[in-house]
Amino acid sequence: MAEINIENEEPLSRVSSREEDNEPMNPALTEPDAMAIAQRAGTSAAPTVSPRRKKDLIVQARKDRRKWIQMVPLPYTQARDPTNVWSLDDRLNGVQSSVASKRMPSATKVLSELYGLESNTKSAEEVAQRVEGLVQPFNTDEALLHGSPEVLAEALSKDNSEIVKHYHEFWSKLLKPECAMLVQGMRNYIRNLKDTTDTEKLAKSVQTYIDSTFETITTHVAWKDQLDEYVGRSLESCVYGHAKGHLDTLEWDTLFTMEEKDWIDRLEKVQFLTASHLEIKCLEDPNLDIDEILKGPIEAMLAIDRYFSPFEKLQCILAVYKGVNESLTEALNQSQGIERKLPSADDVLPTIILTVLKAKPSRMFRSLQFVDTFATTENMRGEAGYAYTNLYGAVQFLHDLDMDKPNFSISTEDFRKGIEESMSKMEQKTVDSFEEKKSAADSEPSVVDISVQDVRSRRRNGDEIDFDWALERQQQHLAAQALKEDNDEASPFSVSLPSGFNRTYSFVGTKPEDIRIADLPHLLQEYKMLAYVTEELLSERAALLAADKKKRLAKRKNNVEDFLIGQTGISSQK
Image (cartoon, helix red, strand yellow):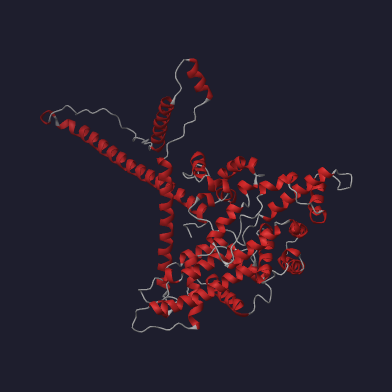
């Protein structure tokens, strides 16, 4: 593998110091960018512009151009950790992956504690807005935040695949001054692309532009004697990477009618299905670790959505197909059964279905429709097209699955029980997650806001303002809060007594031998009244306790339901 020289890339911090740079400026190469900046600033690019001003415009244009190129440093979006709260928002993830955060790994932890992100005191959206305000003053320092060679070097160290290596070479050439006009044309095209919303017209437009641009590259000095298939692939990835923001705003629901949240919900419900239910004989050996055997196809399937271009998505789909065939062969080699079943072509589609169930890929409908719309006829020929057809068939099968009458090797009753068990496990997992986060939030010390008036009042009285005083205020606040919660949770018992009842007890101090025959009617009347009141009080107390318990359970269920819907979009009432 050829060595990737990142150190020779010109740091952005040096781009703005062209005053001291002896490299001659070529107006034919840099003037398009300078013209655009001059027009945005309301300045004519006429000869009346001073040489110094023109040079400043060229420097700024070069810096602007490099920043735009570095917006897509890889042919895919890097995978995010779903357990990391800083990956929940694009703005937070951008800060987390910046060079500044790499050099100060504790920065995000400190911000999480300050803004209550880990303890769910604040939402990711709220924290992202505040962090964005902190980062805003540094947005012009690309060396700290955007496209730094250090960030790219780290990505390349984790992925040394051919496509990434060649994309870096293509990306590096675009940064050079001789590619200024080429990049300017790309920027203008992407800017105008937002006016097109019809996917069919968009596909034709993008492919026509990529073909014409590739023709330009074939005679460009930067790629002299260095053209290969990866240049075209890298160009496609670059164009689609910059167009991703616009493409994500389009509707992708013509091939499949199911909503994304319903798709994920369905996959969760049928997690109990196994190779036996799908009649994949060569995977039925109980000694096989199915998750490990299908690890390769699962990773390839999850990568489909991350790549920008239809060709690279198609390559991931092909990797799923090939990986499934390799997994079936591996299962045969590992099988310890006496009658080992040889894998056949009939096992491929069911195994892809099982892979989809295991991977639970998001935005799969969009990825399949994207490839169907934007991939060229040439790309869809051969094995790649066959692999796409198999994956499409697997997804279509699960999409059209009748949840009341399943087409599996399983009875309807067992299928229904399996769905109930899967839903129960999913809800319990969500409840456990909710309780865990709630417990973590409850264990966090309550933040007490000390007003300016309190501080001034204490100073006027000559009292010391120190950490001990702040802790005392916190303890007072916690005690008052606990008392308020106890009062709020207490059940008010307001029992109405029957008419005729009074608290006059005529025979409390009377001895048995002192009771006369004439006292018996009065004594019996008081006894009946006391018995009646006692039963009324006990019944009403039991009813109030039951109602209070029901209210508490309903409140807790609503909290869990709100959390479930907010996190997964799946309601437990389904």
